[in-house]
Length: 227
Image 1 (spheres, rainbow, N blue to C red):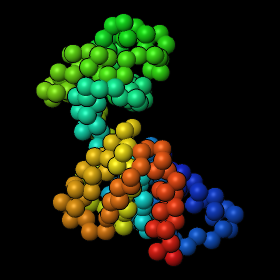
Image 2 (cartoon, rainbow, N blue to C red):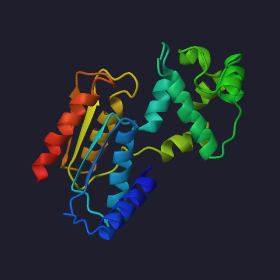
Image 3 (cartoon, one colour):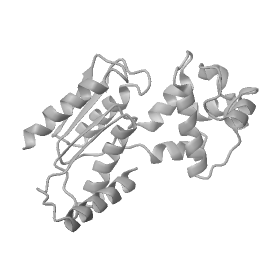
Image 4 (cartoon, rainbow, N blue to C red):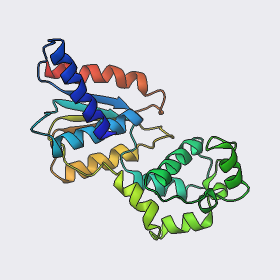
């Protein structure tokens, strides 16, 4: 996501040059949910590898899954219905493919659910409780840190532990049961521990969906400080 967003910034800048559209040099990054993750990842990439090309003015990621390893532990360890379990399987399937792990669904899921997902896709009708759905082999491997392939994929997508230079304001719903707020809390704690002093975190009394509207209003409020 970060590299694709960086390339889009380059393309937008070139497009503006071709049309003689003036730019003021400010760069604001914002996005919610998957866009929140992309915002955080892009901010990190630009400051760590492209400061000679792009200077971030400020960013405001919202509702993102920044700490993938902790998120995987949360899902695997839950003993209750997780109403977004199909979306979590989509992420798992993506990592299984992108990182060329290429394991069958039977490694991850109990039967008959592995066969159902194999035939009908990750949004098949399946149990919502991970203790019923997930294979004991997978759950034990995650709990014991013994599945290096899938855990390396999760860790490779952790973006919570770094120190942004430009101001960053994180927004998350404290009642978010899709992307739990510990993702933002862990990011804030890790960044502060690394000395970041231009970051803030606001937890709204909202869930994942209901936080979107106040998030948008707060984006305008935050960015207007830099005019």
